[in-house]
Length: 193
Length: 193
DNA sequence: CTCATAAAGCAAACTTTTTGCGTTTGTCTC
DNA sequence: GAGACAAACGCAAAAAGTTTGCTTTATGAG
Image 1 (tube, rainbow over the protein chains, first blue to last red):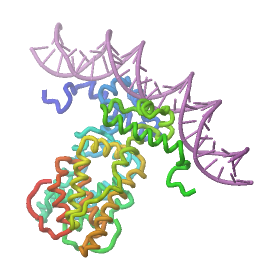
Image 2: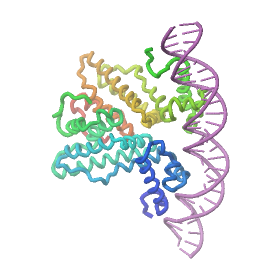
Image 3: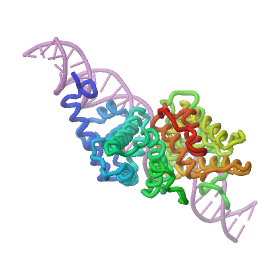
Image 4: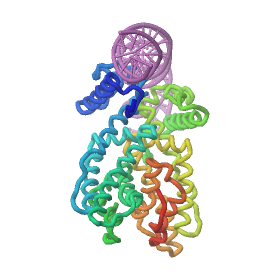
């Protein structure tokens, strides 16, 4: 019994989860948010609502659960030859995703969840990205900051802007944060943000 | 007609809002979160539920609205004699508040809201604090960074930790962020975070 | 193969949310 | 200030969503 999660991960249970996730995604794409209710999701997934209530508790947690799948750690990370380039490439993609309408909704669903474990997973995802990029950089002989410094200098400002000030969540600002964290203050200058 | 907000801010409307906000706060203090539903809030406020639904739409928005009042810009800010001291004092207080159970719930309510204006107000509140502290510092002849730099260097890391990694939302780390943003790297060294 | 039980189905209570319509009450104009 | 206008509220019925006890299915272990 080395199942990864849940007490009984086999067959039916897994099938239900898949069906429900698929139903959520389908309804998210093809329709207004009004349609996104537990009863409708259940219907679409061919399950009874009570199953969803018992497994996920409420809509917010279910949506957060589904949205978390957008953050796939197995996604292939960019490899541009420099840490700065990798960070910029990954960050550009991340910004684009999180600024899109579905991305924003997903982010909101996750933030609306009260489940600490879910937040934790977001953090770990980001850290794993940084670790991979830094590891590669060191393999190339590049110097890299410690992970927490990169979180402070790049991830935090970016995340803050995504949540509170989307207009400032731009690739240009990302470039500044990266430069400031990696190089010296080779960037000091004007610039709103 | 120089009303500050809403189309009809006078008399009854304002009274209802006050009563509802008061009811929410009362129920928040004296009870489990189960009791915090629109019908109960309405009952306590002496209003019909439909009023709340029409004005706020749903519980999340109402709670976010009430929670925003915790961020009072008119609160007296610390004055320790140095910008670093002021930032630390204000930040310590802010961290303590946001790490408390009611503070966490309030923060969560705000993050769960889909209303952009609400996020904006959070940002403006923080910026106004920074502006006041910096203005005072300059009056004393101190050098200060630009506001966006302080947001990047102090607010963003602090906020990120509050949301994703509470264990690292500590006064000690706050001190490092402040030192790094204000002074040179007089702090470089070990330290998780 | 059989058993124990986690998880799903079902359906009936129960609660919350929506909605139409009538009434109250600020606000603006004259 | 008197009246017109409309925003906001109250009420109550209808609709929708949620909870819950019990039954059925089928996984995983022996």
